[in-house]
Image 1 (tube, rainbow, N blue to C red):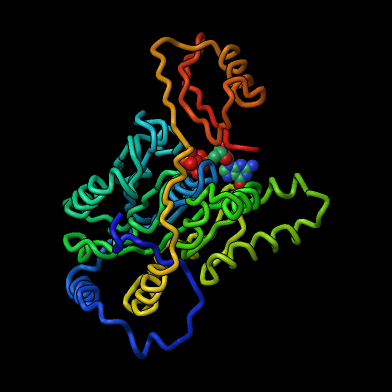
Image 2: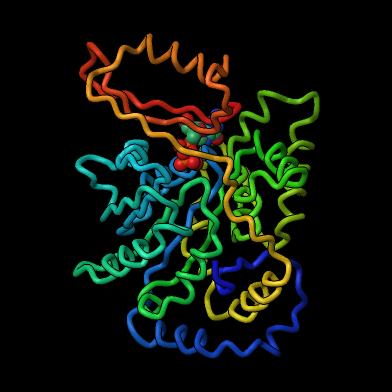
Length: 341
Ligand SMILES: Nc1nc2c(ncn2[C@@H]2O[C@H](COP(=O)(O)OP(=O)(O)OP(=O)(O)O)[C@@H](O)[C@H]2O)c(=O)[nH]1
């Protein structure tokens, strides 16, 4: 990983950078290039740990009344293409989405980074102009290299702009993920995704309410918010159930526009000295199962029980999803399991 890819951990800074910005003139030139021609297309990066609710947010945005022509780039860690897309309601004949791009078999933050650049180039060269691009990363993505692609790529920069990085977190699992990260450096992605966010969506608040933990709900949520601010004091935190959020709070934020440039540069510089290099938790693996024949639903259920609850395969499963062609059914079924839910 190159030094330029190191992420900006969000740290509290004073107002001085405005008056004395670091000398990164290439960036300033590119920002000016973007404003002198047609305004660049905003890209919202939607990140968040496995099963936190990223696709739920994409669905919510696409189905809202925003009047925008939106393209969606989906990135899947596994090699099976189409599973992620099956989780999203594209509308009648795909009407809700202007264009889809699926990048499978690797993470946009590392192995398929170049495919991302190509995909973005193609999207902005379309005859019919897009209003916005949503990029849903894998749950294991580190936003830092993505931000560097979107901020610094010469070919892209005049045509697109990083509008915002939205990190969706699972209110029920966040505490455990952060504790384990501190103890053992597991879940580095969960930590980095928050460090990098412009907006953190504290999702699945309903599950916190259900569980209660013997504490007042608002106390639990306040504690979680505090943990988020400890990592990133600059983020806007929004509580949601099923990612239902006012779109004004997440689209067209221009969070990384020229006016925040000095501030961002400062974050990037600061992060270089403080960042730990363990980008991916390499104890995690993905496994894709492809079955040509229709499956027996009872057998699938029993197999899942053995896998998830009895732990007969001797592994922890953080996320499981799929599209099932079920015996004696003329409809496709989707399968969703996210850890501890
Ligand atoms: N109870 C509850 N479930 C939710 C909420 N938001 C999402 N879910 C469910 O959580 C599961 C995972 O949601 P997704 O949107 O697919 O999560 P994701 O982050 O896209 O998952 P990956 O891409 O696999 O990392 C699905 O079964 C959702 O229906 C919520 O606020 N409350």
